[in-house]
Image (cartoon, rainbow, N blue to C red; front, side):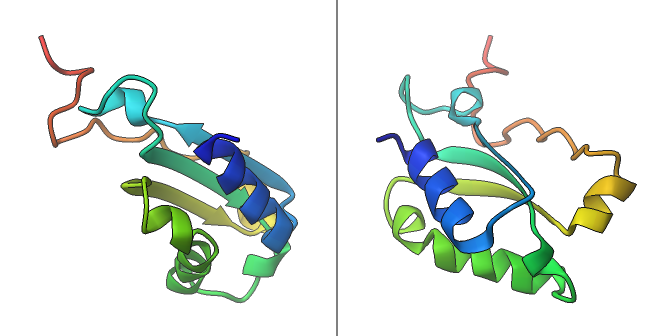
Length: 107
């Protein structure tokens, strides 16, 4: 099972999200091919209702503690309630370019 699948399973199991997207963005960083170290995670869950952003992120860090202690180096988190998701038209920002030696920017 890939790290991406583990992340998806753990989040799904704990938050029963209305929407979940886990995108491996490692290829845009200076890491070996096929790495699973940098992820963009978009989670829409009613469990975020009445929780401030910091509490939502802490919950994700708790759920993914084992992965963060291991091979996962970075998470770009987008944690939304169903209402917030609808207000944003089901869109989240594009991840910014890596500032730590991106292979995508190397020429």
